Structures are given as structure tokens and as C-alpha cells.
Image (cartoon, rainbow, N blue to C red; front, side):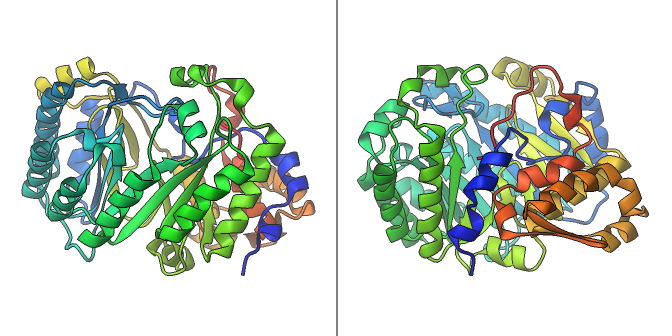
Length: 462
């Protein structure tokens, strides 16, 4: 059984706590370029239509009633609910356009509603979108597919929970961050313990199969004692998964963060102390560390997938169903299909113009080369399995691993000396102390990281 002492080595964390990508994709989003456009995406969809494999749909609803100061997501803060009307109409059109190109042969095994706040939409809008998707694509049965939604309990009630379940959603993720009133005020997210637990309880009552809670450490005015109370409440509810995110204060990149009083942020030492305490509590409560910021119960699908070597990473974090192409719908949404990343326009005007003219709204992307696919595979397997078999990679990609990655292995040898990993002639095994620093371990395999593209800023690994 993993202990926090094994997982959390303060000396190593201080040595390796530098900035780097989260590797929800490889190559990472800063490498996307405008050479991938609507026409290129259409060609990808045409080729993908001939593949007999499931697909995953991602629906991006950008609207939020209020802005949370810590947020780094692509969102539109507005109290004008009517703004969702044309947005839903254009998403319905985009769904039709995608179905026309992909055909109806590829089944949907995953669906994720993200944002923003998806529950900004009203019940009729949800029904329209779900019925259109189910009418244009075959969905796997409820006990086989993973159909999830991100929920803000301030924008949801018991009737909405019941409707979402009726429409086929079977997994829920809820942002909590911190229940402490002073912290909530400092980040402009006032969300009571009572309203949160009410919606979570309703989700269980309605038969949602999996519930995830998002927490965040490093927020202003947080202390070990204040965050401990939040952890106690969440652990007592016992969700299937818990994501413990690091608050990355990057006000130059994310305008809302400029409203946070930097003097109220915990010091780096305090922040790490909160993290260690949180890990102690979660492991002690029986959760297993999946990787980076994800924890799950021993019988959760993520834990089982990791145990079976089937875990995967995408733009929602750790996931299952690694064989599914990802198709994005809505502004800013990112897809991965036919070995190509594609991203929709980030503005409503641009999105409306493209879809209104029956043209895909893709404005940038990246088509992976054979070398990209090789490095993507290595980074994915290390981040998901904490191990890598050189022989298996050599067979799959027809390379000599040690020759091909001589530079990377030289960097890893120093990490091996520090006890982060075991570097053997034919494999890498990440030690428990290296799991918290897995981003550092995969960075040597990133061929683009050394290019230091202008204007690119990454968060610290912890």
C-alpha cells in the first residue's frame, strides 16, 4: 500500500518543482498552428468515417453566471441567459455536420459536457442537444458507455439532476475547490456545503454511476486546518474520484486572476504542507493515487484501467476508452481524430460565422508525424502506467530504443540516481517517490519543449 511518506519526498519535490506541460496532449496545445483548417478537418473526418472504432464526444458550453477568480478555462461570464439560444442552435447544426461526414457507423462510447457551466442551459436546451446527438449517432448502452457532465450546484436543482439522468448521463463531476467561506469570498465562488451535498445526494438517488469532486490547493487564505474541514466533508460523502488540483497563479495569462490578492496566497512552503496533508487524508481514507492530481477508489474504473494497462489521458485528464477518437463540439473545443488535433474558434462570432455557412469552425490544430506518435505513446504510457517496456515500443515502432532516445535516457539517469525511477537495460519503472513528479520524468521525451516557443508559460508541477 502506498503511503504519503513514499509518495511525498519534500527534498525531491523542492529539487524538481519546475514548470512544465500537463501532457493532456502531445504535442501540447502551444504547438497547434493554423495550417489545420476546416478543409483539413473535413478530410480527417472522411478518413475516420471508414474506421470501425468508437468515438468520444466533447460538448463545450462556455457560459458562466459569475466568474471564479482562480479560473483559467475558456468561458464567457454573463447573466444574459438568452445568449445560449443561438449557441445551442449552432451546436445542433455542428452535430448534424459531423454526422453527415462521419456517418452513423461509429458508436459513441463516451460523452463529456464541459465549460464554463453546462447547467447554464435550460432543461429544453439539454433535451434538444441530447436528442439530436442520440438521433445522429448510436450510443453504447448505459452500462457500457461513460456519459458525464460537469456540474455547478449553484446552477442546478433536483429536477435538473433527474432530467440529466433521464437523458442518459451517468457520471457527474462537480467543482468544490474549498468550503471555507473566507476562501470562497477571496475567489468569488460562494458555494455552500449544504447546496453542494444536496445535489450530490440527488445524483446518487437518481443512479449516477460515478461522482468526481474537484478540489484545489494553494488558494488565497487557505491553511491546513481550513482545508482539512473541506477534506473531511468530501471524504465523508465518499465520491468515487477526487481531483486535487494545484492553483497556478498566472495573472498575465488569465485576467480573472488579477482580482486575487497575492498577499493572501499561501507561501510555497504552506502550499506544499497543504498538499502533503491532503495526500495523507486521501490515502488514509482508502483512495488510490492514479497520477498527478487524480485519486480514485480501488474499485473505480480509473483504478481498474490503470491496473490493466488501459488508462489514457486527454483534455479532461485521466480517462478510459483509449481507442476512441475525440470529437469536439462548440467554441474552443479540442478534438483528436485521424491522428490530428483540431480546435474550434475561440470566439462566438467566428464560430457562428463558420457553422452558419455550413463550414467547420476549426481554426488551428496539429497533424502528428510518425515521430510524434512514437513520443506521444511513450509519454502516455509513462504517465498512465508509471512504467515503460522498451522491447514493446521497439516492436510497435520499429526502432532501437536506446539509440533513438540516448539524450532522454541520459537525463533520466540523473533522476534514477535521485531515486525517482529505476532505469534498466530494457525498461523504466517509476518509483513511488517519482509518481508525484511524473511530468518531470516524461519531459525528456518531449521534442518540442526545448524550442521554448515565445509567450508559452506552463504551471509548476506542484
